Length: 205
Image (cartoon, rainbow, N blue to C red; front, top):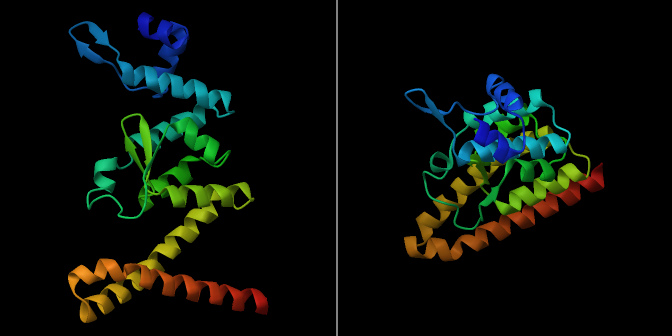
């Protein structure tokens, strides 16, 4: 414990307090010896970084609990990685920078439930660079992250229906090999219809 506290730049008393609050996992024990490892040191450095960004210990404990109970990256990517999306690896402090002041336990649980986020040891994996950048931009424009996530859940249900429609169309009128080649055409139809629908709604409002 003394070695870990020294490496992390904190006192043993602070380390004990973090353990009592559940901010770091318990050590591995061999008889009367308690072993701490790089995972514990990484968690302590994350705590320090989040404290510097204005998060409270209570909030950090809630976030740690949400991550520890969340799905890991193997579960989220169980059906294979996205074919056109690029997953992004983040530290908890990186995530806090993307969504300044909006990384609450409630939002975190929703993002984990949607499969936008997963955990991989001390890292967080966002399933899509495009979704990460767009949602971050919306939050920076003043849209609450909770509203972005709620909209994302609705968009997903509509996207599943559209995907089902086009996959059925392609499977009925094209070979399996052609389906991948024709996939961009389906995306173009959806983008064009969405653009025109937004024109109509904005014009009539």
